[in-house]
Length: 460
Image 1 (cartoon, rainbow, N blue to C red):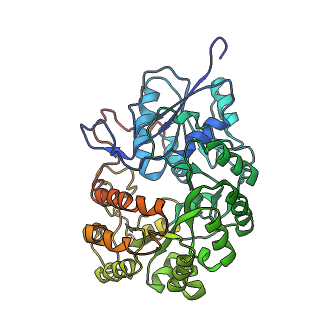
Image 2: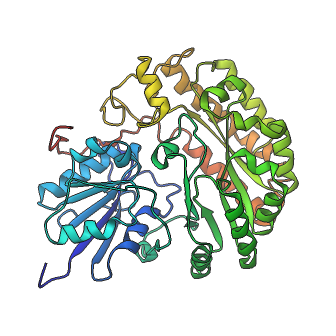
């Protein structure tokens, strides 16, 4: 495009808004990594703008030559609305991310190009084609790309109010094949890691911003050898960090010692269920390894690793009594935090296919159906009514985050084993308590949007 600089606009879509609302629900908004990855992969002569739909209004009439949106299933409807606004102004739109990869034919109905898979190795081609007006409908990754050249451009965050936590990605993917997890479908149960020196450089370059980090890896235990070497090196930087892991973390003493020495303050671990048959159906039998949950938690406690424990409800053996047992278990172990979620059939997962084959799905594509809203149950459970499952999930959250229970869990020596985490415990738990019902029935997409979501082309 001779004579002027090519301009790229990156958008991070929100989940949705009620009609009349100008702003998204303001809480826990962290820096989204996907736009920073794309900005880092974009050639230096391109003018990059970034807008976060959760924090600010998108200037649809601002001049731009290409719009790129990374989407998840919950943000798909809103992303399609945004894409429609830009396309109505003659601006081409490219969609990518989890949902676009798992549902490429659907995404292609609302944009000009779809990146299927990770952007590394494809993005420069997309930009070049856009410059020359030759965008292809699909750009597909033939295999997992190397992350050797992945560099985040965090300058796009300047001037935006995010939670003071620095997000870093050391590895993408997970080697487990949990039935309900879109991660294993997207990455085909593999993990690719970034070079350790690149991760340490990123830590070093962000130390002045704050010293609290969230390693967003889907599972820090998917490659123990490389992960152990990272944490040996990370111990030099005197930072605090949290991440996500599977329960096998708790049965490797060397790993526990290394993450503790490197500044690990807590881990999100998916307990999911106390029922062995449910774990088998989830394809998570590995959760019972090494003596089960009690042994695992005793090991984690010895290293003062706080737990954000997650549980999932809606499998065939779940009843109202399942919630009572789970709450008793969570209270007995006085977790730092816990999530009690209903099962969600994400497209492209074995779970979605199983429920579809059994006729249990209540919507063809729940993420696009205007009757669906956040926290609704999009399928018919075996032993609970959908509305009952939704209510029970909210009830257990209210009980776990009651004022009395927050105080009771604070008595856990692990939760207050250092001043930093003890100081933040009341604030974090109070914020979660406030949010228990905040998003209930939030529409997917902007309910007040005046446009019409009409497919540009039929699915192949």
